Length: 121
Length: 140
Image (cartoon, rainbow over all chains, first blue to last red; front, side, top):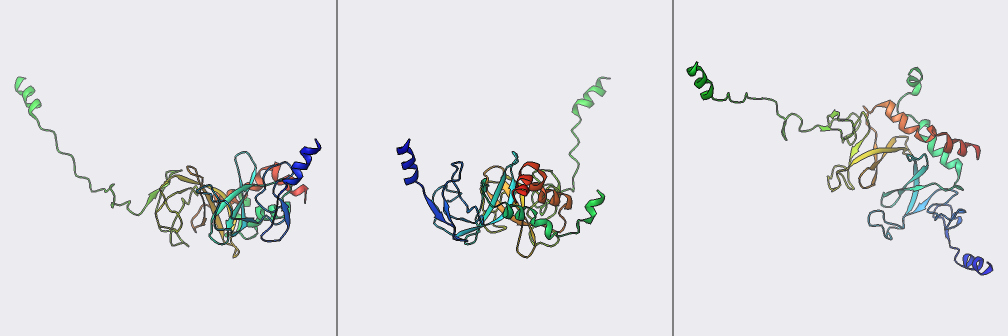
């Protein structure tokens, strides 16, 4: 049991967030691999989506939208600031809910048409 | 009676009537496209944009461009469904499309004649599900 714990501690890997500099463990509390910072939700373009291998861009990826799967789970859409690649990643349980909620209601803050007409529908 | 019968047998088929409606490539629908999702005939002139890339009624698109809008370089040709709504820093709404065939994502500006109800339904989709939204609000 103790040796098992030691191995886990030794293999514990972290990464530093490219935007806020927070040192984050590479795995979430439930063991799922983490691909974005839980504090500012920024990510890094290290995996090529098309060829499914390591990407040579290494650019910072900023969160731009929330998407909803058919199961009801939220996904964060990231966009690479260097090459404009889009990726979608599932949200973690310890992600910053304030930023998630801010992204979800962001379209309603600046609607392109008046929303008053929807009150009569 | 027999003459009548032979006359009917010898009668040539009337040639097909000439049609002046052009359904072929380059015809009257040369610049239009039919939506892959709701089958609406859509013209390419979109108010507010130079390049129409999704159906104004159901917001579905087609996977034909790879990187640059209008390059027609993708081999997939799959149907792209509206997945979510994003906002630029200047406040302009962008529809996030995901290809139903290959899973590729793309972001497209909304057009002036897009269905406002479909746009608002798409923007409200994260808040429509009570489980995730209330959990996010309760942990704030």
